[in-house]
Image 1 (spheres, rainbow, N blue to C red):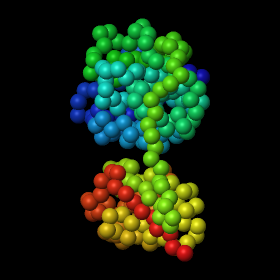
Image 2: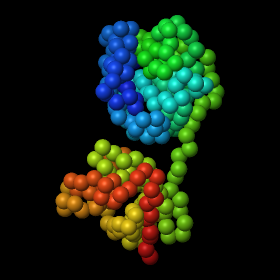
Image 3: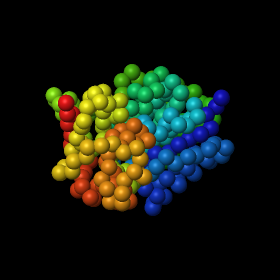
Image 4: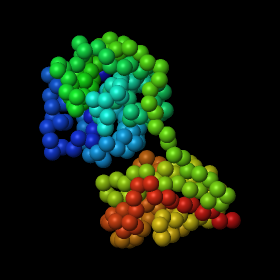
Length: 264
């Protein structure tokens, strides 16, 4: 079955013409393609945020979906444009680590450096490869052009380091890795790791000066303005404030530590 769904994830925002021009390029090549916006609100140049959100979105789409992702602070430089094929999906974008975790989750079958100008727009802007390289490649891919037609296969590509929680005695030290639209603080502590660490013992979660000694099942459990800890839809521990922004309430930023202390 030829893939006919293309998703888009960028840091372009929606004020300017960037996203619309990419969609125009795709639809001009394949008018039957179905386009889905994942988000265009990735923090500017934040490759890690883009990689994290893409990794927790891609698998909800039908197999053979093409995911076009552009968070590209080195556009026009030495970084390579690539097409990455996993077991079930395709990914098109810059070789800067953006596809690190989708590769880990779905396995990498093939990676191609995009070098064939036949499938690019001309001339190629040095500042907008999303429009001139990635969008047309995704569109031709949706028409059934084989990955190897776009360039040469490569055996190495850029990956990001994933900072995992560190266990020190009765303490598990994690950090805030994402602050979502609602101001919730999403950490790098996964549900399975949390429960394997606390071993059914009492615990204390420390975020800045705030202490939390229980887990909530959902936002509905807290009173308005109450600080809560819970596992969100991605199964990562998060800190939230009912009907307020935890980021502002706790004066927290991405990268701030979060501590889990286990009792006996």
